[in-house]
Length: 316
Image (tube, rainbow, N blue to C red; front, side, top):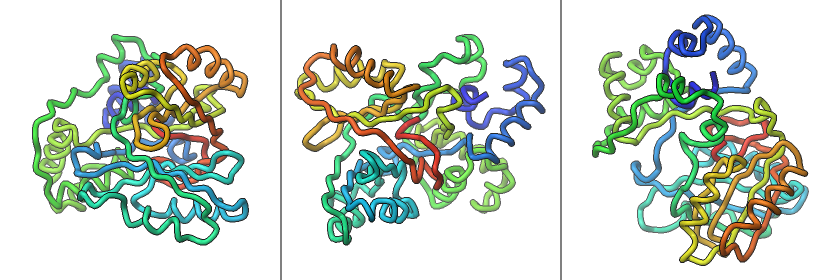
């Protein structure tokens, strides 16, 4: 069911049940239980490149007594996501989306270094995403068979240009809170008719501006340990290594960034031993990796949208 919803976030439960060989009511009940428990949620997200935004992966080093308080304050901001405590709880990583206005970092990134008990701040601009967004762990796990996936998958975007309106932004804001928001509510917040809301949502998806993802607990797949890997690779090898990383089943997200390191990977494993095996057997044979820094994720204060204490990571 989770894989089906990642392939098509607003697909009817009856259609999912038909493909999986169970009743649609069973799928609906199961989704409702998982959503109520905070284990699963469908969310509508936007491609930052198509809404004139850039993403900054921001590392904040704090005094031990301040990290949780600062992380929770960051999590309450609307421009942040994936606020995570790492490295024994003294470091924070968060993603900050800012308007690509040409003036550099967001106001938040300018203020953070002046915050009491913040020892150091580094901001890495995301240059290219090799794996993330609507694609990640579930597709590589191949939970559904190829024919099942084909019957459930939403149409691929055509990439046509679309000029965004205020109504589009209201629509996307509602879907960010709940990707399966009913049409009658979308019509209310946009001041459109339900048919117009449905058509405009389809237009946004076709343009690639809007996509649906599932925010789920990886422990459902037996994945209980997460770490962030910061790698340095010569520019001539960066794209090749990024594409190779994206193929690894352990990798949930990987992107090229600015900064002293130029490649980030979010990795999920069943145990600490599995992470060791992954680093020594898979990372070790990648070409041209000159530096590796690893940081375990000890707590996630905020995932893509909501606050919580679940063990997620970027792009899961």
